[in-house]
Amino acid sequence: MFVQLLSSSAIDQNAVEEFRAIMTREGTGELTLIRTQAQAPLRWFREVYPELDAEQATRLGIACAEQAQLTSFGPMSVPLVSAGTVAEVVQLLTYLPVITKAVTTQFDRQPEDLTIRLSGNAGDLDLDCLVITYCGLALMRLIDVLVGDTSEVTMHSRWPEPSVLPGEAWPGARLIFDAPLSYLHIPAQTLHTACRFPDPLAYEVAITDLQQALERRAGTQDFTRRVRELLDDRPGVKTIQSVADEFSISSSTLKRRLAAEGTSFRELLQKSLLDRARIRLLDRSTSVSEVAAELGYSDVTNFSHAFKAWTGNSPSHFRRAHQNP
Image (tube, rainbow, N blue to C red):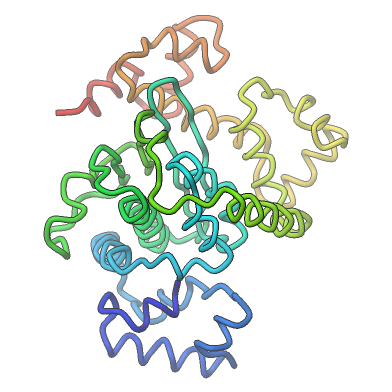
């Protein structure tokens, strides 16, 4: 993807030359990146754009997403092209770690829609803004290519709207700013929409290859991320002992391993609950009491106290602040 962007109009020529100088310094190049399917470090962007802020990062992310090509996704290109439905395209996000460590996705499935949370792992908020904006909008653009106009699919960005946006009509109203967190929203009917070039056999073979690649990477995946993914994917698992049991280790070992990575079980659990609470509260068809019950709280009062401790606002205030115009 990075190499493809270097030959596009998304990055100006001076920046391209700086990127190439960095690659030369680090003993690599465009052909080497393609041949080895290596990931271009995000720190290169901070070096080329030392004054990068959220506004510039958003504009750059949009410009790069406008140039996204299916062939730029390496091992993901075959299953993307051969997917039968939008749901099968979205399923491929499960294998995103095969091609990038920069973004983590979490799914929140409801009867009427699917919400995909996007979290950056750069440790730099502006770089996170760049990569989240790019990845989210690139996926939207790819779905448009495979299905046609899917204007009901929207991306919500936690960052403010830039004073000037690149491009013309796209993504327009489909990119919504100042959201409580960054996520993609896909209605249920869109998930069942058929793609233009389905090839079930090619898709299944590619999925098998991706699964094997993901399993090979699992041994090197950081422990904190694995615990967070378990908390997100298994809402009923929310005690330190139950999580430790999932990893076949003692609770003291789990504490020690998380502490070595600079976090704690309590912190991860609270972040997971908060993200899920925010997503569910955005769905105005669900009452606050229903959200509380889904998250495992015995009553609305306990949930409200916890939510206010996390955010400084009540669930009702949060819902009013982020209601759709």
